[in-house]
Image (tube, rainbow over all chains, first blue to last red; front, side, top):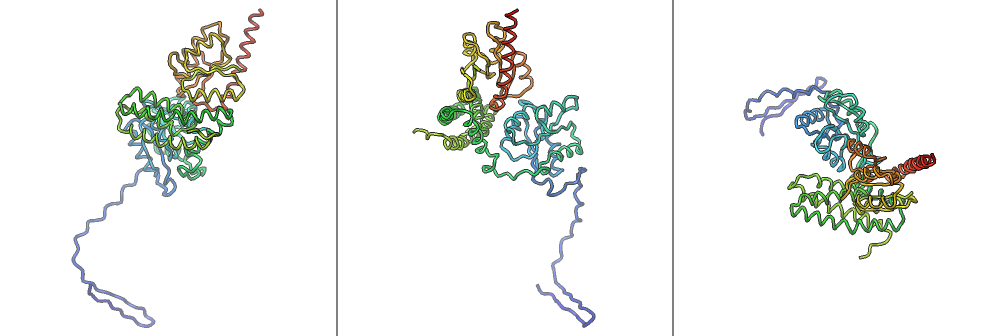
Length: 302
Length: 134
């Protein structure tokens, strides 16, 4: 680069170092932008809420946007769904720490969705659900709590109140076990094994064997019928078979497969996602089958 | 107790029957409401566990019919509901159902509810006897 580098030093006095560098003239520098305006919300405490995932269920786009902005401003990660049914499916897929549930939504309202979630959870798991109601009517709170919700805020959302409710529900308050999909106690396979073992204790070995055999023999037929009705564009047929699969699979504790069937049942006709969902059901049944066969008291005959 | 199960899902019906038999009950199961109605008229039952949505005759229609038939000695009705919507529950109770459980039910809870069923059914029989004696 050229230039000079030199120094002068005197013992007991200190040293001076200097350099000179020839450099091309630079462009004029724009003034530094003002610091971004801080949201008027409670300051985010980094690392505290990081990784806390909130599922926001609301059908109104405006509320979705407002809710998302508020929550993200507070440092939460947010996913938005539009109906109670979608909320149930999302919770079933897992990965959320808290649900913010609007009470009035089309197809399935927040009360019903909560009841579904609580039912699917069984006695051990419990995801905190905060109800969001349109108006603070007397009796609302009782109704929300009766439906299985944990807390309650009313619209319009007040940031302070919302934050307080979220803080009360935040999983970090009581340390939640780290989740590893597929290997932990909440995995669909584990749930299924648990449900089947519990059934095995209640019924005779013959009856248990018969049930397992029926799962293995009748489910592929239903899945094939579902593929056929989907391929044929038969909406009513698709809905009926999906409903049947939903019930059957829930009755043995195959809740993930049951949930997928529920999604197919509710999907609007001609939806692009149908083929993906049925493919996912086939994959999920392969896992269910593996569990069922592993528990079969007698190896299924070919 | 003698329990009639009305459920159109084959797998779930089989599971329910096996569980009830495992609990020491005598269980008859049918696949729709019409068969349940035929059976109840001929044989009666102490408890009826029925699905809501079934072909031919729904669980609620079945219950309404049975409650209107004085010759059928009060069977305790447990309705299995896919949704926990309070409106459905109200409608079911108004139709004469005694109890409801989500579908699929927790089997321990079902067992506990059957204890209630036994108690209520015994009271009904007692009332009936007292009525006949007077």
